[in-house]
Length: 408
Image (cartoon, rainbow, N blue to C red; front, side, top):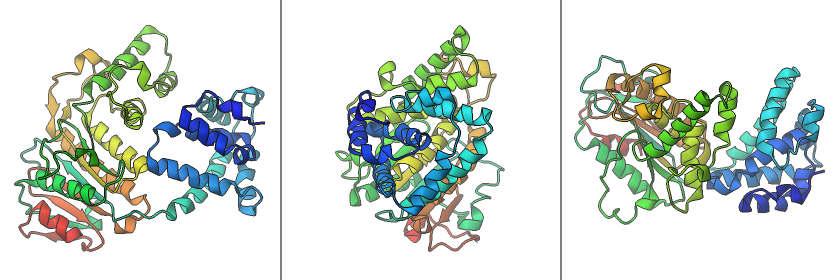
């Protein structure tokens, strides 16, 4: 039986949340309760959207006497558990329990049944999320190809059927115009973690007039500023890999998932524990974010859309390092001042823009969302918005400010 003292080791806010919802948690099958607690234990460093969704889930789970509840939970209750998992301190260590649980389902041939149960609850989550509406249509801007003067690559091919392609964009002040759109939205609709600027290199120092003292409205992260943290994670990976203390990728992944800001001095300082944990997670949970700036930008965009569900998001790709042998890439002492590959980064950014649009379309309110991708410093852009005709090409001379206005 789940008890309040099982949460004694949780962070303060997570502990209070779990204790407050003890009764509905006690009514859940062990498998589902363990999965849910693995989210709840992270409560202290979750974004507001994640916390709100947890509250909405608990409201639904209080309906333990309803037929929909029994139908969904029956799939989880029927899943087999080994003797070891039944005796595991799953409520005290839910993250470790979930890891062991997944391995057990594979070995017991129960993974398909688990997926079926998860999909059933996924429908519940979709219904919960459908009730949430963004305050205003979301705006996502992706800048790719920084440092590339010309390219034969056919850009935005996957996106063209969904919007309007512009071939005569005037590049002057394009970055400033993109940033101005983000800052204007942040000033009009301020919200904690509601507006983001992610840069794969050094963030641009431009601020629209009057924003010098209000930059907190836009949350900014850059690959350059996070270099100490990235290299510290790389060093930890390399040390574990070469010392023999870690055997295989699964153990390495487990080690990285258990890392927390208190273990690494390079985690950005400050009292914002949400951002400290988020910055670390970008390098401990992402695959390749520790090595390539383009992967960092793509993964950061994915996680921000999935977790923070922002009103505005600007992703700016920068040239990544050239590809080299994996042993070199994993050496933290060989990851500074390296040769860059702008053309390869353009390929990465082009695909990353498409993935970002897909992730944007997964959010509630996607039908009214606005998406703009631009070949930075050049003449190509694609705009997707309710008012933009699909599958069209325009050779009209314009700039990003004009396109953003047309998208509104």
